[in-house]
Amino acid sequence: MEGGLMMSEKERRRMVMMERVMGGEVSLKEAAGWVGVSTRQMSRIKGRYTREGAGGLVHRSRGRRSNRGSAEGVREACLGVYRERLGGFGPTLAAEKLQEWGVAEVDHETMRRWLMADGQWQRKRKRGPHRQWRQRRARFGELVQVDGSHHDWFGTGERQCLMNFVDDATGTTLAWMCEEETTAAAMRVLWTWIETYGIPQVLYCDRKTVYITDREPTVAEVLAGDDPLTAFGQACKKLGIRIMAAHSPQAKGRVERDHAVYQDRFAKELGLRGITTMAGANTLLEGGFVAQLNAKFAKAPVDSLDGHRPLTGDVELPDVFAFEEARSVANDWTIRYHNTWYQITGPKEGMPRPKATVVVRRRLDQSMTILFKDRPLTFREVPVAARVAPPRTAAIPTPQPCAPAPRRRPSADHPWNRPFSPRARAARALREGSPSQSEITL
Image 1: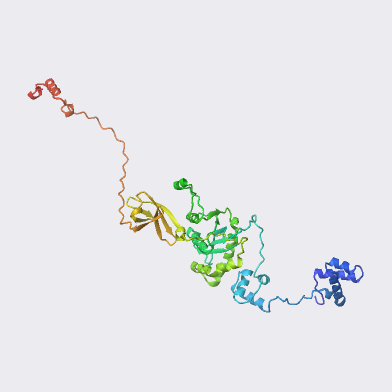
Image 2 (image 1 turned 90 degrees about the vertical axis):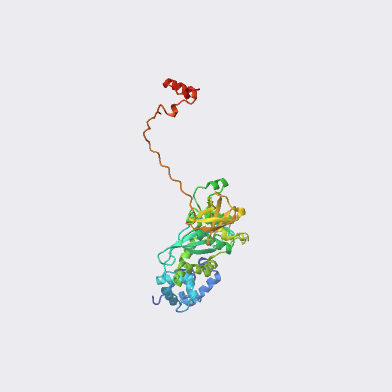
């Protein structure tokens, strides 16, 4: 209003108190105690009020431009770039992109206020904690959370999976893009983690069949006292890594929240760069995007001692991260694996006997090794047509019931009815008629 004076609530209280001081109702010391300032400061306020009236109580910086304020035109320039290229970006990420592109260096809270005033952003409600808070692990590598994030990363309507490993103590992340959350993908990311940082102590994952199996143990596992393991579990067992299963997504909330960071920042970075292939996405991840996330969000651990175990020289990771299956040797020293026959050719000193069990190891690069008692065997692939299959036994027909055959009696002159000894033959000849000379002679 023209001729009016804008005052805050604190300034109005001071004006009322100064009127009482000037009227002699209260002393300056009592007024200072009620206003909450020192007596000396109250004396200065009284002096300004005496010289300037109510205007002397207004803050001197009111109406002046802030020393930390942005220059003229910066707000319009930032909002223009946001409308053109950064639609849908959050204030924090938008401020980082504006600084990266050289538009302006603006604080994320300032950008948030500008976007809300321009109608480009709305305040989001923060939800309360769902579960009881759990303290981070103390050492880097003591616990690593594992999960796959299924999302439309390229904006094409098709969902791909981002395999994500997050350290619990520091929040350090490592990611890899793949088609699905498979055993091979989990092995590949763990392989990279071990080569980069070392062997972690525990992997915290969900109960997907990639990590945990609910099948019944085999006879060999029962005799050995081992629990059923997946191929990923067998690789972790060789490295001494313990797998711990979570019973809810909230239990491994650190990796779940990290999914949201990737779905926001990584998906938008792919859109800005025009990347629509998994090869390009993985090149971006390895080319510095993951390192930038770790530099921005990773924290220092409580205990500076590294919880990773170093990778020793006797551990061959290509043989660790492999699929192993048992096969029985046939009588012609062949085995069948994935509908293909292989002929074992040596060595002569360690050839398995027929019916023996060998282990077929298939690495991630699809190379294959056949092991017998942990020793490699030489082999070659046999074409199916060249292998002579053993003849199949004809099926025996089921007998059908039939009527019993009539009993047949031999004739009188049948050899079965003739006596065996000469004396018996002569006596029979006498009974039946005149005997011949040879029959009478005994």
